[in-house]
Image: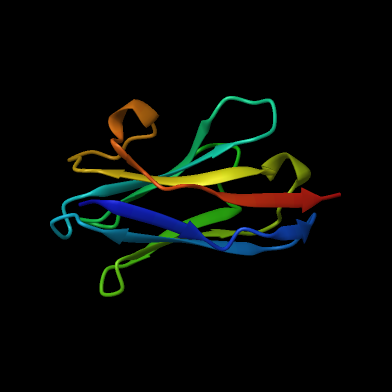
Length: 124
């Protein structure tokens, strides 16, 4: 059974940093792609970043490029999203999602498995 569990959400001030974690289990290592998505208050869910478990390639949304970094620790089956220079507009519930993909994808329709989400709030 595939399970994704996020953690690390918190309240931070603008300009601060936060690191989210996603514990990944159930995939046949490492043929999976993990995406990070977020849904802000009153907004549609949007893609933030994704990483290939196979080769470590990454991709970022323009809104977070240069501020967020996605990484993985395959031994620990963890995927991280390090967020720097946080802005109030980064406030959202952050989800990690996974699936067996041979491409990097920022399309939520490509992901079957989702975590429960973790809340990030950025105060101005």
